[in-house]
Image (cartoon, rainbow, N blue to C red; front, side, top):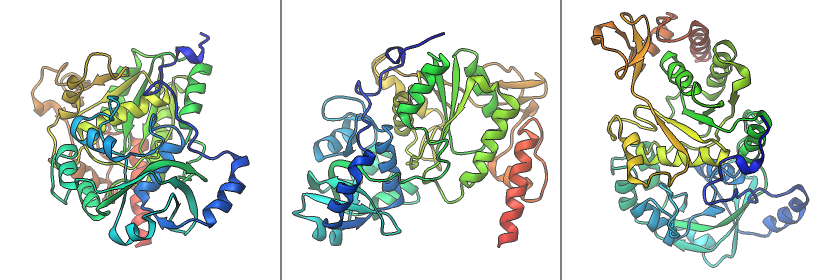
Length: 394
């Protein structure tokens, strides 16, 4: 089947913002300009946001949001023009940095190696209502929540304005950091019109595999799209997860119907509102469907189990354009002799094979294989070996 770009779902806001990354011929002049500018070092989260802007994943944003958009997002989950956007993308600074950059028209942004990675066309400096943002976006002021802690520690001022990224700020797995323009081209080449995306920050276990295959029955292709930017310190390292993703796709999925692509975003762990953001991002990549499972983008006990699914009801039918696919908790049922969910399985929980994350980690550390009904042995082997190496390094 031959497709054209016109048949691929439109990016959020109608067009892909892919001019934030400097072209090769622009670099010499931009680098000279950056050398004359006041510079500030930015956090890993901001570096992730710069990469997402550079590859078009945050379309229609072309930089860090200004005050009117910030307030509208926090209060209404929309930009000031009415377009859905659930979490503000901001560049927070403290008082000392504020004194350095106030009155500047442009600011050079540096990474931890003191390299200039972007130039910010400074439009506005404003003071965000951080408590309001914490309560409305993350549903808590508890600083045990990683994003709330970051929010309260990053500074009481925000810089806004368009950015020009001089170099990619995410350099892991470059062959899989495809960007939105590239994935759209690939979908056209593959003839995929209906594409489902799956968000994860963990290895794919049997329950994930089950829902991916159920979803794949109804679409043309699957984009496995793990978050590879900044995550929590206790999440499994990115290189180990990549081994797991490659293995599961090679062993248990038709390769002509799958695409592995990394998302260089920083997790906010905002639960329901992050589910909306993740759906918008996948629409920008060209996906028509997006899997939303149990406790999507959750952390701790801040959100209800299926709040990330319920939030989609707050928008008009078709307004987001991308179609969410809701799944309940799935498991292996001994009585059914197969994978199932509470929607399909009539049997008592005593027949269900379910393991807590804590129990699985204990087994892996001890070199024990979790039940094959829970995880594929190839994946368990990768995780066991990585944990052994981590112990040896210590």
